[in-house]
Length: 331
Image (cartoon, rainbow, N blue to C red):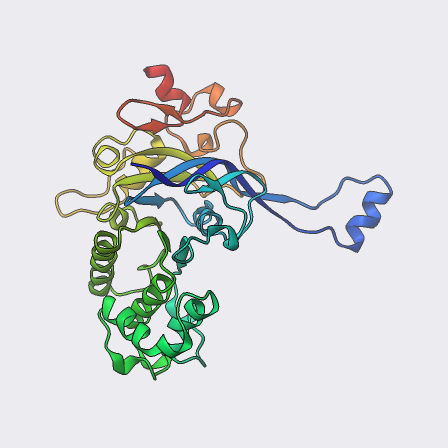
């Protein structure tokens, strides 16, 4: 399948600007205390047309930043982000003949919607601004957009606070689809919802994928949610992808110790939590990540060379790639 999104060695850092005291100290020869946080560090990733790519990892590993880079909300510092083979610099470079190529759906629908804006305006504002519809078409367009996500016309003249969390998320989905995207980035889009509502929204995502030929980057810290929607799953740790494979392959045969630890912490009906791969320790600070393999301080199979050598993603066959020196040595 053709690749609709491709990331090549993409990096994004955040740095605190030096304050007056730091600038004065630096002027007198002291070492600057300003630190750089590398939220995304050399990521290579691709999303195929019609594919759901799941992205999992602990909170603080850089998943949301990566999603914003794909959506064009944040610029990248280095590397390349390609949309349909063309370099994507910002939101304007995603424009297609039909609309905007990439849209994003956020975790908290209440915060994503303007509380003073009617649902009619929330859905039609962007299509009108980008010339996709005329203002005279707004109401009929919005009715169709709401119907697509299972809501009725009477929602158009109401405000966000008059809806439940699941209904608000459906409105956010309708708003995202109003500009005819090819790719939708879902950033923890079901995390704030009740479990029963989560299932409804996930089924809606899959139905829309089939009817509109959408591609998804589905971001979550919960691998048990991602496994139900994803064709492939990528595992992220401290700004880097450590394993990527078809969903069935990764779930049945996780290779990286971090992936094994994430899966071991998912409770099931037929087994208790595993002690063998239990994840120990806290996530290191991204302001000062460990040298070598970033997972080595928490890794049960770490070797001495893991402290100094940074592993690369390497193929283990059938599209399964993993970044681990110990596994490479075993192979």
